[in-house]
Length: 398
Image (cartoon, rainbow, N blue to C red):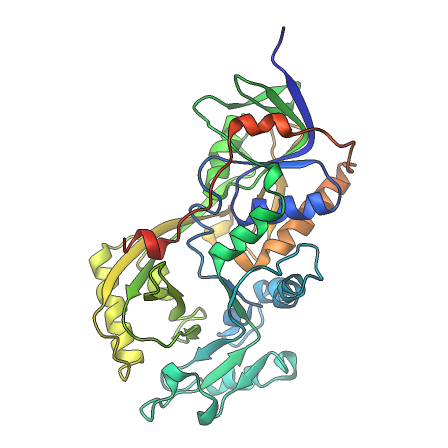
């Protein structure tokens, strides 16, 4: 008697935001889709996200509306629709950390950027703040710069992962690559374990940097992947006011990005990114922390943070390979070159996740893959179920 075979429409490998959102959207459309995750759901890149859902305005700091900005500009409205329960994925139980995101300058924005922010193109999406409307961390007589309120919002990423996981928990399973493997037969990819074979009509790889090894396991070389490293800084402190903001600098990307979180014990943590994180990606942690301390002292000298503890988090962002390692402009879905039934997907940034799921829909339609008959996926429960990843502000300060 041979190994039992289970057939599904879609098998997704990778339980971060990309896989979880796509699983929800596909199952909501009637697809018999399942998801496999090696570790905890949201591990690595997703749980390390600052949770910012932005419309690309931060890419316009150079005074030009770039292709990246155009591709991402509709995202905040799409996410807000889902948060109201009116979108393709239901996010009504997800916690929103802030409905506003701010952009501030240390001294003043150049007239070119200021006039761009005031242009008709961004009317209703960027609001210049008067002094009495400044967020509390900037409400000091010593603040001499300019500040804007953006249409962006900030989500609690652990809550987002939990929300997406709970809605289709019965379709999410663990995979142990010590015993399971990806196999190819007649140019069709499938998963094999000692207990059974899972043969999907379509395999979708959404494992972030792990996609590279999965493509290689299928004997493929395309799509090729690039890594864009960064080293974020976390500071646990005693300043109660939350802050969600970009500080402009000399480059077209934010000099410093701040998001606020709390440990499971309720302790405030600021999570610091922007140029600080990208330029210090490969530097010793103590050097990046020293630069972060200097940045906060220079940019927000009126804030007393009290006793502080500092940590860094080094990670790679997985993306489709670009010339000169440029940042991709939109979500990416492409075919694995070695098989006929596998796609690899990278959202490239949290905000573009809905765009990625729509690109998956288009790719499936192009392959004439529609929802098939319902299949009993209960036997996959023998593979176990993954938990939810712990936040970096808990693991680093435990």
